[in-house]
Amino acid sequence: MFVVNHTLGVFMKGYWIVHITITDEVGYPEYIKADAEAFAKYDAKFLVRGGQYSAVEGPARERHVVIEFESYEKALECYHSPEYQRAAKLRQAYADSEVLILEGTG
Image (cartoon, rainbow, N blue to C red; front, top):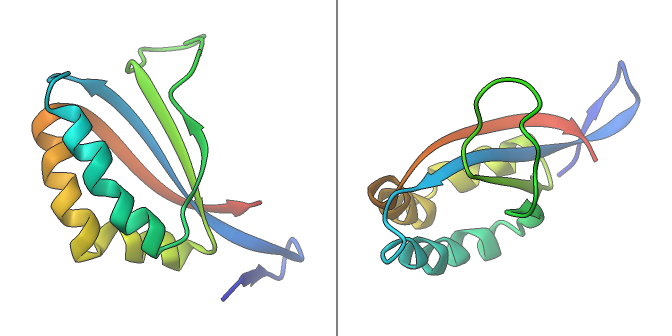
């Protein structure tokens, strides 16, 4: 299902923007392995996963991730799914992070 923003006349997608500081380098790969089930189920597409960055204004965490979903609703469903919530507990144990879910154009 695509949501059409009638003001813009375009299909709106859903995105996760996640900022992460890993606090347990040994345990964190467990989260990466665990999140794959939810991301596959909801057809998540990684647009950014780590990589070089410049914090040109304000503080920043050490890792940044942008994930695209078919719609804002799918992005929310993925986050709240039992599959992702199991993985989220691992992320929360092994990292400090902020997760934003937003609607935007693709």
